[in-house]
Image 1 (cartoon, rainbow, N blue to C red):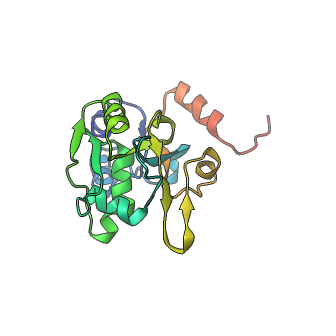
Image 2: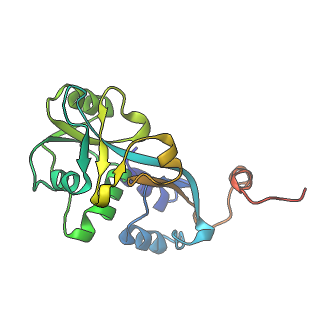
Length: 203
């Protein structure tokens, strides 16, 4: 399910929890308030569940092994065309989060990609076979593509490794948030939240 579909179910009170891979945009927060769900970005209605990261990838047969954050954003904005950009038809939360964090503050926005794909498998297959294909994938979904080291000013190099993601040293690390509505939770959800609480408890 896409972020839009999940959010629609949540604000229509058809779901008890919303899981997202990026911070919600202000318009979504306002819609939630108007739907009576409360202020979703307050700590009492938001939990951090996990970390993930986006990884720029290309074909393993490509000679490219790194890309700068500036060149990556330029490719996705359509202002640079060294690569053939591939993306999912329905953009997921992480890609939208990338746009919010690394493009919009600099006056850039995602351009329609050179090639769109309905499924992740189709996207992976096309990028793996394309001579100069480029996309962004979650850390655990790179498969047989070639992950690219992300470079930046002052010798910055950020590669896709579990440790750099866990310590949030990787530039494209994203947080998985769990948002809760402003109402009494089902007892099973309460038990889950207690189990996720890292604070010590006296039994």
